[in-house]
Length: 299
Length: 299
Image 1: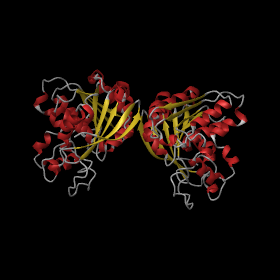
Image 2 (image 1 turned 120 degrees about the horizontal axis):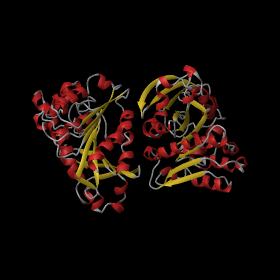
Image 3 (image 1 turned 30 degrees about the horizontal axis):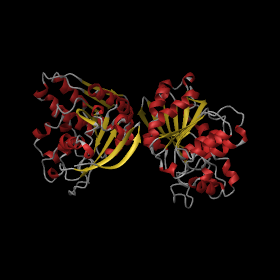
Image 4 (image 1 turned 180 degrees about the horizontal axis):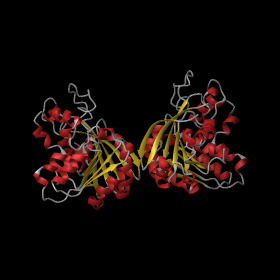
C-alpha cells in the first residue's frame, strides 16, 4: 500500500524519508527509511524520468529498526556522491501479537531472518522474504504520489546488509539472481544452517526438516548446482577479526568461501578486517566500500 | 588523574578509546572518548615523538555523553584522512548528588555549559571551563602510560562543538585565544545571554549579575575591545535553516555575525544550510567541513 511519510530529514545533500505502509505480506504496518540522493531529493527534479536513480537495499541485523543504520551506518556520504538511493526495510513484522514474539532478541520481533515462515504461529505474519523481494519493491516503484517510481529506477537494484541482514542480502541475491545486480554484506551470517542463531530461527520459522533450510542458506545456495557454469557472482563481504560473533562461529564466512571455491564460482571477495568488531563502528568504516561495490554495477 | 581505558574500538583505520578519569575540577569521574587516527592507533608507532598528531576537541550539546557524537557524528572519516585525533569530553559532571541536578534536560547533568559555576550548590562540581581548558588537556598530554602525550601534540589543538558545545567552542576560543589554533561550531548557541537556554543556565551557574555572563557569551566576547585590531579569527559556523531551536531564537547566529561585523574582525564564516535540522543528520553532513577547517590550521 501507499506510503505515509512520517518525517523528511535533510542529510548529505539529499533527504532521508521515514516512511510507513500497511503490508499485506506481514499483516502489519511496516516502517521503511528511504534516502533520496541530491538529484531526486527536491520535488522540483522528481518529474523527469531521465533522472531516475538506482537503488541499494540495506537489510539490517538482529534487533535493528530502519533507524539504526540510517543514523550510524554512514552510507549516505557515498550514496550522495554516486547518486544512489538507499532503502532500509525493517527486520520483522512488529506488533503481530504472537505469543512469545518479544521474548528473545534473536527470534520473533526484530529477527525475521528474511524468510517466509512455514510454521505456525509464525507463518501468518513472518513473510519477510515475500515482503523484501516482492511487496516492498512494488510499493517503492509504484508511480505517482503513492510510491517513488518516478524517481527510483526499478531496473537497477542491488542489495547489501549486516549480520542477519548480510545473510538476507546474500541468500536473496543467490535465490533471486535476476532481481539484484550485485550483493554485499558486512559481518554476514554466511551459513545459518550451521550456527546457533540460524538453527534457532530456521527451526522456528521453517521447521525441523533441514532440506527446507538449504534454500535460505548462502553457503548451501552456492553449493547448489544452479550456479555452476553461470556468470560470476558480484559479491563483496567484509568481516572483522575482532567480532565476537565471528569468533563464536555465528558468521562462518570460511564455509561460504569454501563453498564458492568448490563450486568454482568467481566474483566473490571476502575481506578479513583486523580488530574490527560487529558494531556500527565497523559498518560505518566500510560502508563506502559497499556503496562503491554496488555503484560498479548500478551506474 | 591517569585514564582508565574502558574500551578500544577499531574504526576508520584508527581506534576509538572510551576513557574515564577522576577529575579534581568536578570531583567526579569524567568519561572521555578519544579517537586516535591510523598513524598513532597502534602501539608500535606510539613511541616516536616525530609522529605526534594534532588534536580537535569536540564539545557536545545538551543531554549528550561522549558517545553520541562518537557514534553518529562521522568526524572519524575526515580525521583519519588528515591524521588528526578527536577528543570528546562529557557535557557535565555526573553523579555529583546535587538536589535538582537531574530535573531538567537543559540544566545540571548533561548541561554544564562549559562554565565554572560561581553559585551554590553548583560551584563545587560544575567547573567545566577549568576542566576543558586546563585539567583535561593536562591529563591528555601527560607523557607515558598515564596519558597520551607521546602521541598527541599539545602545541596543535583546535576546538569545535554542537549547540551548547558550539557555545563552548566559540566562547572558550575567544576567552583563551592562545589555547586553540581555530574554532568552529555546528548550530551553536551564539548569544546565550539573550536566549532562554542561556538565561536559565547562566542564571543558575553564574547568578543574576549579567556582567558575569558576558565573559562566557561568544557574541559579547567578540564585542569586547580585546579583539579589535588583532589577527583575524579562524571561525567556521554552520546552522540549518530547518533547525527548530534556530527558529525559536535559541542560537542567534545573526547576533554573532553582527558583533563580528561591528568589531571589524575578519576570519568568521557563517553558513546557513537550507532545510537542515539540529540533529546528527546535520552534524554528520558537515563534520568533514569542520575537520577540514581545523586541518588548515593544525597541519
